Image (cartoon, rainbow, N blue to C red; front, side, top):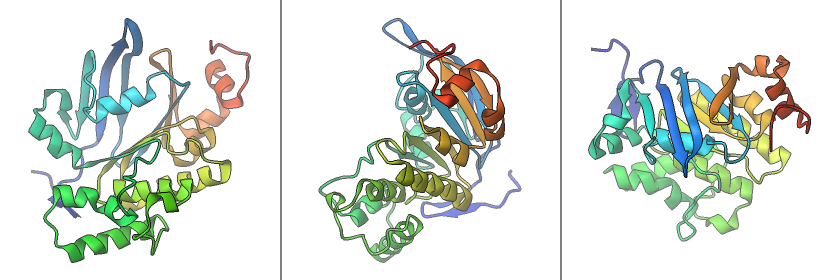
Length: 267
């Protein structure tokens, strides 16, 4: 029996995640004979953020889909909270997903629902909370992402950056302790990108969330990551802290970091 204090969430009390919260071992995925992930292994400690950098089509989003249980790998093990998700049945996986939140690249808000209804979607799907509690949670989560008073607006009435923040409010509505971000700053200008990156950092700190951020945004990676990994040719070619990323002379990292055409990266 764990001696750690249980965590209160809108879905009820639960034990804190194990540490490491996520462990991936020898993950392999191939499409049409091409290896997308080639024996990828990593750990993420509870409450920390791993940023995965890499070129387009290198398997970053595939890694997220495997962790969410949306794609079955060809080989490997994925331990979340100490259990191999590849051995879970559908009911067990559905229960685990209640502890996870996914922030999609294009916000993925329901256009026909108000912002408040979008935020409440998971609450109405997975809880029997009274309406007054749902409305309170909507207001709380929108305040966290600085969208107070916008619950009655529709997505098309918000800017791209505000839609992104609204999607984050929906992601955290059920108090997930694992949050996965797929290209969270894609299509945003540098100023809005940093607003979103600062928000990701705030969510990690306020919720003690264990997070994976898939991105091309190097400045953002330096802001939000406890660890940064470079996915190249199906493997984690490099992994270290933001400080190590900024100072390393590794040829692959230096080329990607500096945006140089000269180096080992083959396009």
